[in-house]
Image (cartoon, rainbow, N blue to C red; front, side, top):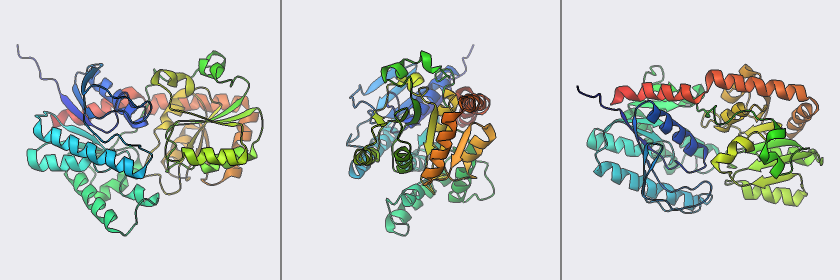
Length: 409
């Protein structure tokens, strides 16, 4: 009897287990799920940059996933030069290893680094390698919007040319929302025919992150939050997040019973901490990224959780923290542009409120409303959890990826 060959999937990403970034945790969840469905999963990554900086073995096996950790510069990710060095050296390492190694099955290449999919294009030309391009952020558009590069300069033109080649030659392109799909179809010269383009939303492991009463939450006790109204922002404190508005709202909501809690790190953290010191905001606290085993408690410590995006960034990026908030059973307050994907999800689910970016007064009004209405908090948190289970479960997403990748063997 001939045994059926197991499908093989090769995940290529700067971030993977045990990295604490949202991308790293999502891809690890996906890899575990594909392994459980009978795939042989190989991950090509490097050493962690989000969370504790540790050097790990070059090859490891984690829950059946074969992890290859490739050399990279390992510089400060919050420095522009450091991030570029990290990304370029990882790109070179990944391209060399994949070029000189026999890799059956498709590559799943993530847009971290932003130009990593160009390695897929080169491998397709040189080896006939098939690849799926998973777009978490649209480049160079996001870099232009955030002011990193000139909209009309040579870097923009070259980067856009590289990205278009990567999109056009991918066997499949996966995006995180409908707005992003339209943008990427244009880059792939497919403004109307989108057979290669698939929307698969991010997710959270709904069995791992579950609603938890604050009276039973050890994180709440450890950080003295028992009698506080906690407004939580958890995740990347980066340049694409409108977090200055949150600090402005905290300045107007000076109350010893209110705590604004930031958990994470990123390019804006030092700026926000400086604002907090200058304005004497003792009720604003910062904590580092929490270990994975702490997340079921840190994510459920809040009365309200925040999503905050700078104007113009939505459609170029989709915040993975939204799904974790829905899973935690807490209401979502989102500083996002109305009518776009995040706002539509919140409105469809009835799980929170939407505030325009830069509108600190409206944010204060929404927070005051939730603070005064415990029943509204419970209702909206419950609705969010129900919506996640119906639309954004890990099981559902893993099966969608499995069905997408299997025919490419």
